[in-house]
Length: 165
Image (cartoon, rainbow, N blue to C red; front, top):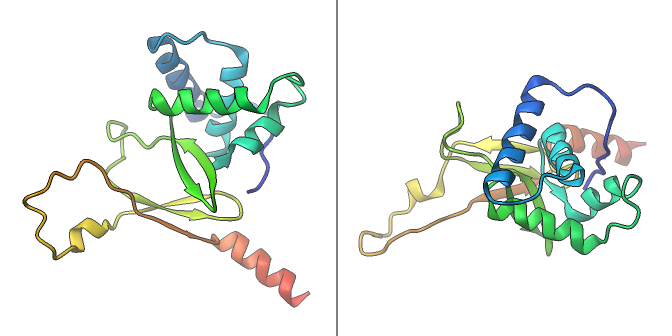
């Protein structure tokens, strides 16, 4: 996955709002509001894509050289537990991104295309459950997930240029 880094660039109002909502959720769940946690949220809010724990840890190393990888990983899973982040797995590696919440304006039931190179996501409005002909009336579906992995248009174009060069 493409690396991420903290930047001194001003954040958009939307990005700031995501960070504030995340910090509020942490506070409501009883977590201390630390600069590290705020910077982790900033990385996700500013990038809006799936990111590996290792990418997050690497981005924070300059600011927190003694922070262990386990601390980074624990924080990410705390964020998942309180509903700030969602996670998926690709090639035996966990990927994290800001959660898509049904209560947010414009969000609805959907799935994702995930770029395996940069982590960019594209919302997919189609749901495979809508096309299952098997009778599931006797069961209780509690959850489901449908994800498509591949190269986004930018990464595909870049890969094509690399091959022809």
